[in-house]
Image (tube, rainbow, N blue to C red; front, side, top):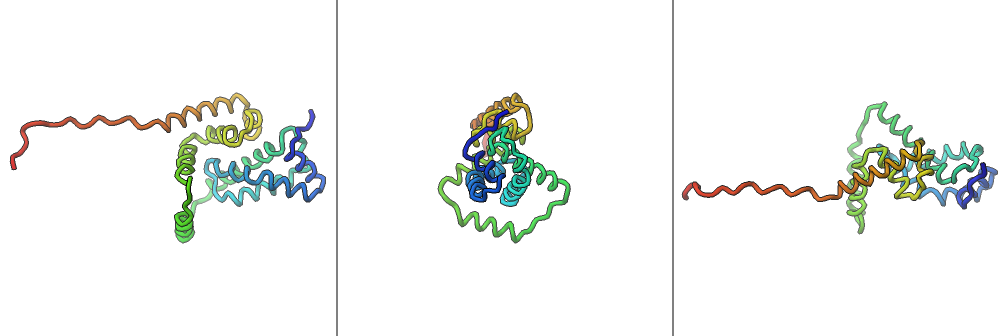
Length: 196
C-alpha cells in the first residue's frame, strides 16, 4: 500500500526522521483541529491537557507512522483515544469541585462576551444533545470535513456505521431545531363569575 501524502503528512514523515522544523510545522498545521475535535467530544474536560497528551502520544508513535491515512486522520484517532482514556479515568474516580475555580471561570467568561457567542452556545447545545457516538461521527465528518472512510478510522468503526450515525445525527439536529408545538390555550370559561 502506498503512503498518503499531503503537507501535514509530509511534515509527519520529516519529523519522524528528526526534522525539528517539520515537527513544529506539523503542530502548527494540526493543533487547532485537534483542540476543536477534542472540545466537541462528549465528556471531555481539560482540553489543553488532552491536546498536550495527544501530541506526546503522537511523538512516541511517529516512528511507526506508515502513512496509510493522512497524518491529520492519524492524529485525530490518537486524540480520540486520549479522550476516551480521560473519560474512562474520570468515571472511575469521584468528582470534586473547586468553587473558587468555578467562580473565576464564570467571571472571566462573562467579562469576555463577544459577538457570535450566542450562535456558538446554540451549536454546542445542539451537538451536546446528540448521542455521543452520533456527535463523534457528525463532528469528524461535518465540522472537520473528514471523509466517511477517514472518520471510520478515527472512530474505529466501519464506514457504514459512520454513514448511519451521521444520518441519524442530522435527523436529531433537524428535530431539535424545530419549534416546540404550540400548546392550546386553556378553554375560556364564560358566565357564572363572581360579582364584585
